[in-house]
Length: 210
Image 1 (tube, rainbow, N blue to C red):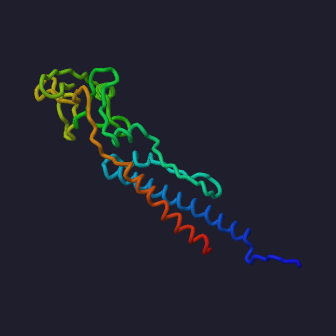
Image 2 (image 1 turned 90 degrees about the vertical axis):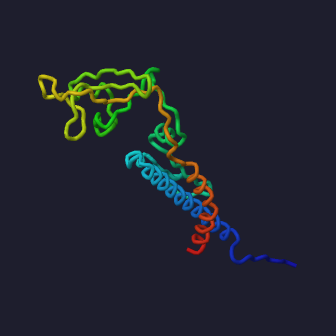
Image 3 (image 1 turned 180 degrees about the horizontal axis):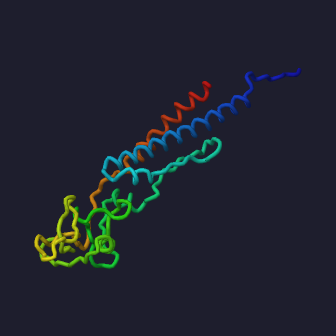
């Protein structure tokens, strides 16, 4: 007696289709979770008042870059990791030279391209010398003997007699600064990770139906 076994539909084809659907589902879920995490981190940074430029330092990439895989992964990172980490952890910042940190006042204005100005840059731009003023209580100062202009910036006095001239605080000098914790990136990362199972299932059902 001869027996034939015919399985319909083709089991191999069914399994291949299921694997293909799984690859598409996992890859799509990783792309979705990665894009969501990147957007969440950028919103956090701008919401904390740290600016769009720092927010744009957040980047994302899904792997593999080409094709789909059951082992797909998403990576989200910052191109300014030290700055991001400082605001995420609330670090203590000290001067590299072991002396003072110079914190510009409103009278100092901005440096090149809108960034924080340094004492050396300020002296070069204003053509004035800064004078050190030690204070036993509170931060010491770097002051300019001049005046405040209509925009509230420290500038040289126009008077040849010294009339109207005053000592304008340009920088506060402190030994260290404790940054407030303004970000919680781990919270958003945990939410993105927790969303993956649901995203994979939803995308798998969609891939099977297509």
